Length: 412
Image 1 (cartoon, rainbow, N blue to C red):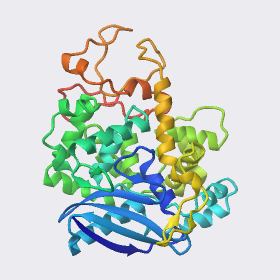
Image 2 (tube, rainbow, N blue to C red; image 1 turned 135 degrees about the horizontal axis):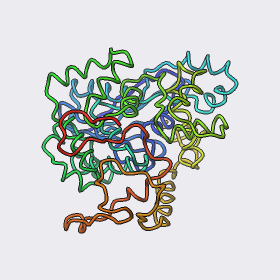
Image 3 (cartoon, helix red, strand yellow; image 1 turned 180 degrees about the vertical axis):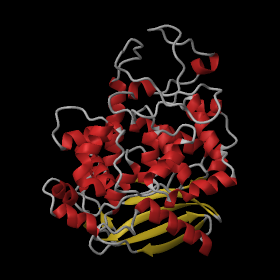
């Protein structure tokens, strides 16, 4: 196993912890890992897979990141690939000076921006990763969506022997292209989601080249092009624009969890729909995506997943020492989620408030569960039913095409 080390200098102010939590979203994200002081991820490079370990070694106003690699040899081409991937994932070249100047003059946004000063907007490493993240999270909670993606990475992602455990990269298109919907079904994806993911993985060179032009397309044109893909609706398209293309002015208006965060922040009594989100976000229209990220961090802080106070210098190697309450945030949150899952009631097919899980077959009769096949009966029950609720994603992306229907889905 080869090891390497190099350093990066982010645009200040910069906080690795806040940026990583904005990227990973949930404590049990197994692709983007965080132990309280070090971010770890497996990246695929021209020389093979390697694990990066990134730590912040200087304070937010004069930041410095130490990057350690292990796995494949870090040749010059691979080093450039790693640096480019980290630039997207960790946003360290983004300058938010204009946003902070604006926020300082806004009595509502100002406190939120100051609280999470140093967060930089992360971006998914590839369009394929961004699209699969959106598909996985349709009509289920973010928690379940992240767990489904963990299973996908563990089954199909390239692996590296990490610190005491085997770690997996997010799958590449070629890792998924040869699978079947039935194989993805075993991981918990609906058959329709599986078909959409496989079709994306099998796109030809001309289609991929066309999608590469999304970077220069206006929002409306980019959204229209993405919606033409199977399994992508308005929420998924806006999510990709924000989290892959870095369109930080865009607040995904169909994101139910984000709607709730926005409503709570504004102390609104009535729920918001898509048009309502557009209306109330208008005062911060140039920074809608940054507002989205700040509200996400606020919710994560309220749940005890991260410490808002900046980390302290103090480790012997110069790395930033996390505040005491943040060191065990991931394990504590995972334990808390496990306790919540244990308390969940058993499946109730008569629950009228349970949202329909995207792509699942209809039950033969109202109130009666479908008769499972032998394979389904033998497979451990996945937690879609337990996870679905008011926080489920999103209102706009219920795939409505039939299993054999060609082309993009019809929107009802």
